[in-house]
Image (cartoon, rainbow, N blue to C red; front, side, top):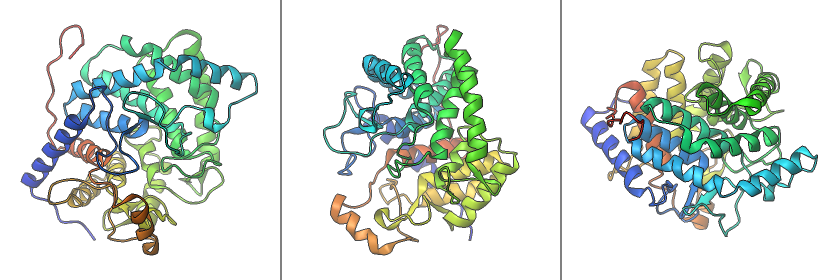
Length: 383
């Protein structure tokens, strides 16, 4: 069932509200809060979420905001150079640190570790931030010099660690190697090569490791012609759409992309709303607007703009009367009996979620439904 196309004035107001939320809630340090009110997220910025938010802000014309986020990433990682170098040395010596001693998935706004317990060892954000940085620099003609040290540290960390099991996008299943995570790492490696962010021996190593990673992804990450949730699985996950677009790891014209998109539609998407995965119980396992937007980007890249527009309209329809977009909605819950348990634990669903607003912007700009206002660029490449 197709979602009714929304009035363009509604889209304009939602887009304006989304970009305002992202830029006004950005902290003085440059971090993007995941959600300003949700109890489990308050005070934290995820590298993964933040990178996709920055990419959307950059694409929508808020280039200065995106640059401030990448500056924050660089400062945060440069401050951890000793820790990163220690992880790399230990790993290369055959003594990889345990997950709790690896870099975290999320940081406080000051770039520090959190004090509460979390499912922290995730690699996806480290690939995603350098992918998004490369897109931003190219999009706005900016110089890479301020970021080279942080990019090199990140690359070394990923070269040493990408084959390890870790938590996925959803902070689950640390015992597996997740295909969306491999996609994020591959996108980061592709970006540093494409945009000349590294050189010399490090570049040579990335070229070799990227070839190995892609071979691993295309063999152990595929079953029956489609990408799978993790190595050894047969299921799909809504995050897999990102490997097609916007990350560009899987050729959108390939049979692999087409088959993966088909299964994401058939198994996880109802009336335009995409679930994370079958069996999801988080807040009852609802539909995520940001995943519908990722699927829309993949559909558009694969040539189905009509379906991409339908997915955009569904995602936009989840906004509240105040134009705030939630993390998920409960229109077609997979596990309705689990919804109240999460509400009792953390409160109602995160609303607004900046990542949801960001992905609506990113897809809307791609489809021409949302205007991108380009800032002026100085000859030196600074905003």
